[in-house]
Every structure is written in C-alpha cells, then in structure tokens.
Length: 92
Image (cartoon, rainbow, N blue to C red; front, side, top):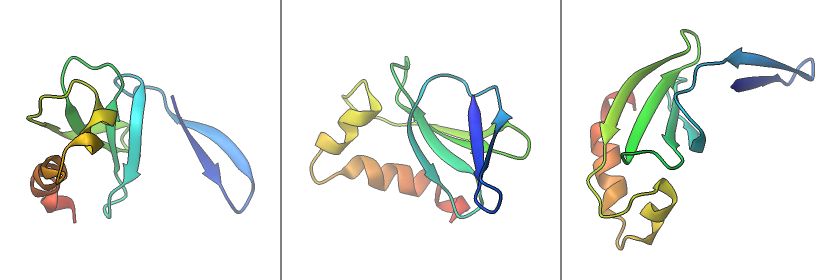
C-alpha cells in the first residue's frame, strides 16, 4: 500500500493499494511520479508509478549481474545509474 502524508493537516491516508510488490527503493521524479524498485523481484527493473492513476507508467529492465536493487551501489563507477538515467531521461 502507498500512503501519503499531508503536511498542512498532519493526516496520513492510503493513496494506492496496488503497488506491484514490496518496494525497496523510492524516489520522486520531476513529473511527480514515483521511481521505484522491488525487493526480491525476478528481474532488476526500475519502474515509474503515477500516484493520481495508481498505475505503473513505465518500466526499464536493468542489465546487471546483481539480482537485488540494493546491490546496484556496489558497481564501480556506477554505470547502472547512467543506464537508468538514460532510460528515464524523458521524465526529467
């Protein structure tokens, strides 16, 4: 489930209930979409999620020898992030 915090009221409410799995990494794109990866997924994909429609809007499979998103930071000099950035450049 995805919850949102409304700073002006202090309220926390469920926004979406259909994330495709256990989210392991989360960031916000300039478009307002969430950029995320999944924990223990069968692939090493990076996904964009639209909060308004509660749907995945884009996915990129990342070519890497690692099997878990948190291992990406072990690559030097982090070419994996260049690949991700190239694939999601349309959002920036």
